[in-house]
Image (tube, rainbow, N blue to C red; front, side, top):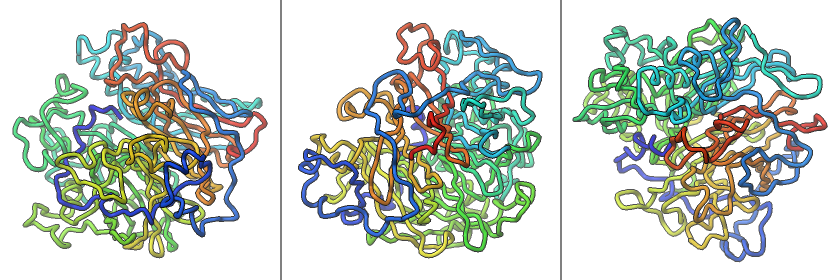
Length: 635
């Protein structure tokens, strides 16, 4: 995420408690796979007394069976001995729509019309959908944002309507078909009847309680039931009925707000000017002229990758937020539970419980499943317990007297509703993952440098994470089934470097070092995979010096062992992990290789930070990782 996308961040001025003022060291479970004498000395006797995690040794969990790779600053992908990595789908490659496959031009001179038929920029969340088991399938993937310095041959100078259209076409979602060749390598299948691009100009339906609401209506859509496009798509989830859920994260950064913002605009960080400057040539993104248009973004979007003619749907019952993504669990009676986090400083963690059970028959049979149910926001209490607080109109303060005329308005103003309910402010909740063996839910809290700074909540001695630049991972266990309204929680890890001299940075994992956990996913063996996203402005200086480039690590949560599995090229983010069902192929995304500290590249600069993967302009890409002998990944 570009640092300038922080227009949505730090807009929470409520007095709700924060996670660090509620945590204590006794509830932290420290990973203990590789503690050195130096680390033990720095961490001290109090930590040693915590020991390894308690009764979490599941006999069915898979052990980590690969050789850890060292930190790297090389402009390449590094994998363990016995593994191979292959780039298969880079920004600008045609997705494979028959008769419409313009090739990528290395000087980035493709038109907006070309880009609308090509893989977008900055790959993020990704999922594999089998067509022929683990041999052939679809990849649905997000394209989070654009670096307009790379997207256009001459960058943003001058800024034109054509460049706005191309930037918009480089956003959204792609669906591509892939297949494994006899020699084990993978390739895109082109043309493919499944190939699809969803961009800022794709018609998308609005469903659920906020559909048709007065705050969703615009001059172009007086019924408030259909919107053009989805944008800033970050993480993603795969539903049990075979659809793809994608979160619209930092959407406010695309809108120029009113000169005199009202309370609603201020709570969402809407202000004059925007990072993308689309409003200069596309009036729809000028919220001064179209004040309801921002309300139509910030939703979870459901897409059927197996039906390229289907209309994507914004599911408003899941709430409006800077959604990182959405992840689905299933209750014992078959109802869907959708967890999501809002990736912004001091924002919240949510879950939605469907009213109805999942029906057999796939996407068509469950087309309205996510339109009916209850949305909750999390409160983490000081005693290691927590509550899910329902965001229901008429419940507690969620009434017309407090600015909520109906349930639709509660969902459009999800942040304000969570403020009033007393939810716990978090340090940028990012990806979530559900342990397939224990049922515990894990969430990465990637960082929050403003924690404990003037004007923000402070921390206590037991939680030394003021200026939290390293991040941590929290987990909880529902009190019974996934639809429970209470839970118990602890920290899996506070990330960081135990050799760092700052006392508040010593709460580190015990094993291979990492910082800024972002993407996480469990494989079916119960191994937790952790991806990192330290920004280019952090990676090469100060306390981050020992970490190298961003990386992918594997964690056995039963034993506490952590090993570094992969390192990426210079200044990239490692993100978007998915596997084939047989666990013999891993797909992951390398986002923004060569990211500059300012998040925008200079196309005339011959000394770019990265030239990965093909020696020219750096290109976000999907990478296939497999064992050379064809075995199961990670064993």
